[in-house]
Length: 303
Image (cartoon, rainbow, N blue to C red; front, side):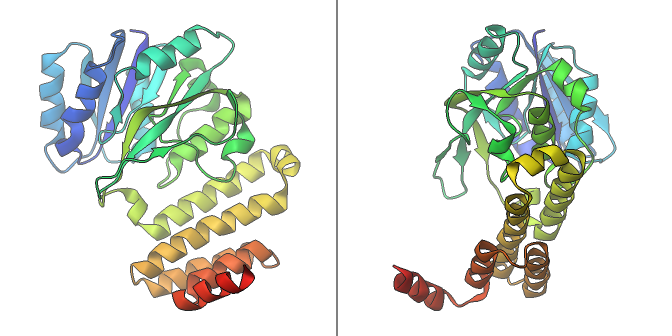
């Protein structure tokens, strides 16, 4: 098999068959799926085994709950393809994803990865397209230093790149962003500016745990600055630290909306401590805490 689809699954029984069906519907058929049950408490194992029994290209393995990063690493170890795709059990591939993405890598042996745009499936039924960052035909490290650029399954990489960067780290909330940062620190990606995957948003995702997500993002950004100081120096440390504060304030605003005021205060204070003299951070902090009518009035006055 040329393409290995690694699918971590934690309590994803209700979506698993649909995700697998999106792989089975591909216009390119040289693929395998390794489903990694990450200690699910629902019947995901039974569903995975049933799917594997119907197609020899599908395998199901189990591990004690360790998070999506270790689950993806286990799936890669159990796989054999030259190209890797990381499809979560609640997301989907468009039918021409593999043909397009593998074709791009087949056509340029010097490139080790490519990423595409994604369709976001929201709970309100809308499906906006999320474009890739940057411009042109290449994705570089600067494009994803401010924010994660794409979902785990919106990329295809060569196995040797995965091995070179050491796979995913065990963390909660930003392990995929950390992985793509380490990949792009090694090499550029090809930008496929077409929506070839679907990313599902729902209430049971980890992103609802604002403290955990913020802690994961901060650890990841701090570690990247420590390991790759030369990249941050070129990009601008002040700008990079503004990004870190912004992520804290994004989660502070979400916590405030969820009536978790103490958590919102903690995250806001942490944001201010990271960039105390930054005007953009001060503005975002004010927008987070001032009453909406007042911030709307101030916006009109500025105009």
